[in-house]
Length: 627
Image 1 (cartoon, rainbow, N blue to C red):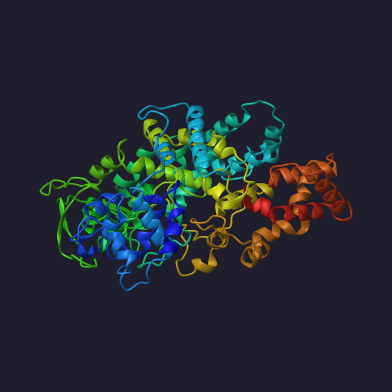
Image 2 (tube, rainbow, N blue to C red; image 1 turned 90 degrees about the horizontal axis):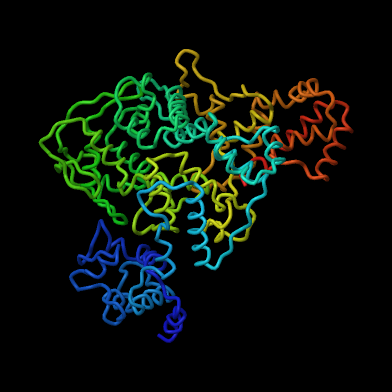
């Protein structure tokens, strides 16, 4: 045991912590037999209170006394885990040091990181919240002995904030105006202008449409049709609501409580999309509501108690019962009054036929005898300001949208075994969002005015980025790329979609190969879990080179031919500058300008030469990435 003693001594002064060091070991090695689904010996190791409660053999851990702790005794003698390799010497040392140190959960600095800095229940000015955001992130960086990156230069910030808030790069005129502006508050003014632009709603509408409607839409099993037009209408509906600055609780309420014809109420397509075979289902709705609006994964609890989360199967179906009064498809949502009980369906893994009373997650059961459309009851509970899920889920997802990583990550996996990296920051943003009446634009102002958001993406190491010490480097979403290509080529009608002239839908059987819009999304869509997971390789290049619309506007130099006719007095260097501003949102360096001018001067056809420069710019990683 000498080697183990040396390993334990390494923790002196900086001992292991429950959430950071111990729970990952237990989750990997022990919770399959001692978690939520299975509790052999009546022992549950998911939380410290459950460990202290112990099982048939008594408490699993005794603070400060490894030799009296059943957990340590079983592991040290290699009695546990059964049917698995014994723990490594390093993992054993971690567990022993943690018990010996008195079962610490958070470091003193971590406890500081939990406090939200601003009082709860009061709306604050964006600058005040932004400063609190920076303080939270700064404390975390200090705790991890990391330094923050410098604030981004104007061009880097300009391009990032346009893409994040309006879903496209700025026009050459917009870029030049901002870069030449000397006002000290020009960044705050730009954020306000972008939030006031109709393009804000369009961009956020597309974003939420894509989160609800994947590019490969489900098909109606009867007609084979995909709801492309309804999906498009859903994006338009979201855009209108965001541009009206409708509050998030009202938006969600309209989605979850509506009924009628989907052609009149576009948001109701949600139920068909998250259901099965184009039909609304209470289990599909429950899984989606949990993920999108509550930030939790409930799918495992549909069939059995979740061994790694706090959700029992009974809780899943108790929540699903709120949507049992609703039926529908891609055309219409109908409601009826149902009682406050339901039977777990036979498709479930266990407990099929068991009666369950409706109830909120971790809440009291409802009146089983009452008959109603229960969706308004659920939505009222969900959208209350003190709901433990609603504000936190949106704040975390919005942070993910801007930083590629949630404060809790994945964004829909909030649980004790997956704690936030910056707990106080998440509390701050959730409190501010609720106090503002769930004002989406207000929360964006708070975040985008922070130095944390405005830092450069140039830095060192993944640890700095994971702690939000620098901006992430990420690829454009497919929609960002398409909108930016429209602007770069000065072709607002650039549209890669084909659809049925009568219905607006695409045929489900041919959509996979016959719809350029869908194909464009497949080629250029990003992995939501890792938005840096992108290779500009053969599929992307073939799409650029072979797509008939992109090819037609690149060959022959027509796009630049029209521009040159309208601006005959521009010098070559000025034209090159405009091309850089329209794609990279910056002016070219002296070397870049000289090379491009020399290339165009050597060509017999100026329009084609300038188009070649444009083609080169849109194929650069600097164009394809958000920095």
